[in-house]
Length: 449
Image (cartoon, rainbow, N blue to C red; front, top):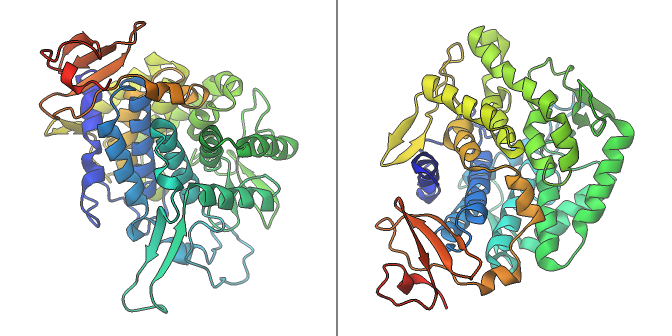
């Protein structure tokens, strides 16, 4: 990692803030229903750290493991998911024929809400693939505590583990004949359903199951038989499905706003259907122009600030990095550096939130805290290789660095050479370290045997 890349990784200590402290993460929408919510920021932070762990520092795990645990723990804080108590009642925004609100429910995993549970399944799947310690296989290791003070019938807890979480989501796929899981009641987005698919892939890899096989087969058949999602060359793809109306809403129908266009799911579908996403990338890439066009012809009546393009600028950069399009990735970052006020505090780099919708400076927390940095850290086929080339038991038999005195020593890259020795880069210097070399070396004492 170079200096800029490392400074984006250093910004992830946002995960270490105290419960209830969401400084630099608060979004335009205070109700946690838009595209800039805590859960999406936490999830993408985890995905970024997983990429760094897998591609840059596979033999230095202690620091990244701790950070991923912290991010997953934060996903369980009530601030992140309390929206579901009311959202579960439904609404005419996603169900125009809704006759009345339902009673709703609090358990955020048992049904629908894949916009939370799917992201969490992918986070935990990545953790187990990277560390293989069974942390989230323990009963109750995924625990949601609902504790309002002055309302309700007393505290509630909803306890899951990796297996029961995966099974609950799989049951939802089955209930909908593998078309997917709903986000909000009645709304089934192909974008949000990419995350549980990837979560199932890592669950299978670490638990010896085959849930992802039937889910991918069923999802492909369900969408392929009813829409043009998997047809090549289409200029107008489906975005989401209205369950009650049995209607697929496409990109043209949402007014070309690209609020959840193919650009957003391209990176993640590339992990399990790479040929199609490589074919469609040029078509998807054009939607990135919507951000630039909006900034040049901005007006407050053109956009809902909660739902601006699922952060098209950042998503375009991430997708371009996954496809190996360095020109686009670097071009977007250069644009951000020129117009979006890059800020460095204590060597932590980010682009601060800006709500000025009619200026070039408009910036969301998800894009500024995570997406632009993620795109700089991702490599060609980065997400694909997380699933096609996961860590295996053999990975953990190799030497690794441990008990590194951070930040005195900052590890920027560490991998194994052909002789099984560690090749380490720290603070701008590089060295080859054998697990059997004399402890007079600065790093040899921190290499496992």
